[in-house]
Image (cartoon, rainbow, N blue to C red; front, side, top):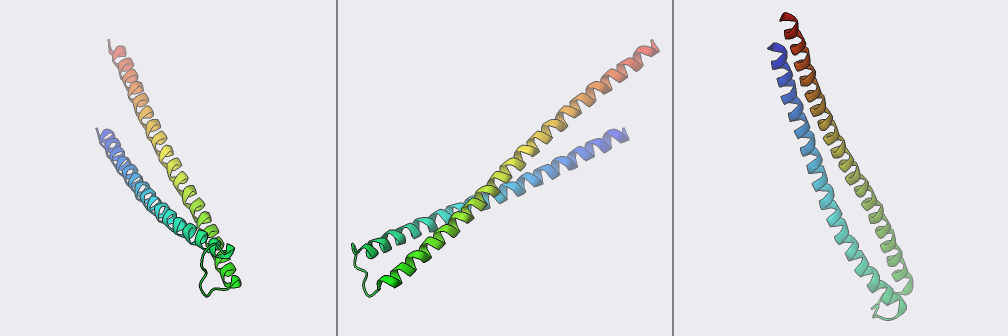
Length: 136
């Protein structure tokens, strides 16, 4: 009975730990999703600024008091910022993929534990049956 109680307690603790890990992954995934959405907004804003600046450089729009060198400098700054955002997006997508893989691994481990528990119970039944057969 002690062994059974200990095993049940261990199973309960293991389930709690698994649940905590799932919640951590969920919170992290939600944070990544929010960051990706914010990143997308920043990229759209940069794109709008870039289109406007390109029109000014081509002379299709009024550039006001800006000279060409100043506009080119702004354009290169926009390109650098866009590249930085793209790298950040790649990092976030890698993190999201890692979280998916960790979640998949956790589900596989849980299935394995369940299979092993079922197999252990089956073996226990077979052993107890063979013991009872000897007494007859």
